[in-house]
Length: 264
Image (tube, rainbow, N blue to C red; front, side, top):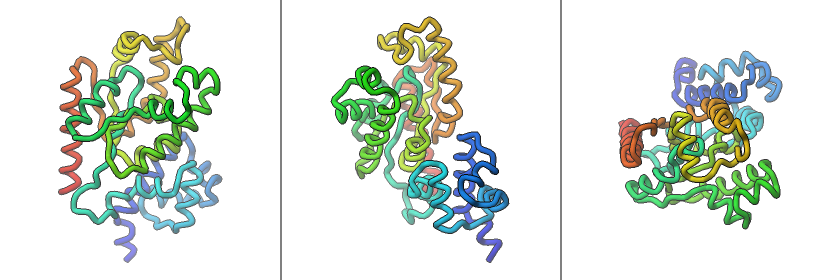
């Protein structure tokens, strides 16, 4: 019986999720132990998929990571316990820094998949009654992140799958990133810094780096800081040197390959 538990794929997936969440925050296992009240030895067993934590211990882990228990469970083991022969229809979330191509790739991918395309920032503007530039000036980034989280939760509660473009910084918010990883198929549209920069300039938008002589250096720094979070995406698509149609083809192919692997 012990051998079965230690090899169960649910516990392996849970362990990988806990380890990933801990490393995202640059916590040592001792720090996680202090936040949860669990021993380092037990947490090591959890991360290795060799422990079967109780519901209360799962709740303590979720609270330490500042996320909902359902997000921790769904993100780790949801697909394995769904009982469906085919994967659930999931939202597709496009991640990436501004200039990655989310707003251009998104509508065409949505058309290809027969789904609506939604930009989360548009939902935020509708909910707050403010344009993003006004929102940042009047209330600051903290207020924006709260509005972003509320809009994301409302959208993810919908049963109708969509193609969703999210803001570039959403990955730095642990709760929002956890919700995306648990309830969507995440796609990082990757590009070289110079390509991000050129696309942003073509859009006429350098927020939040306006009037900054070191804007390009800041862009490179922000991309480097966020790259570890972007790399957690289910799919990674390099958009540099590719047309929009080529990128759409690559994303669609990647989604089909994931569905086929799950079905097998």
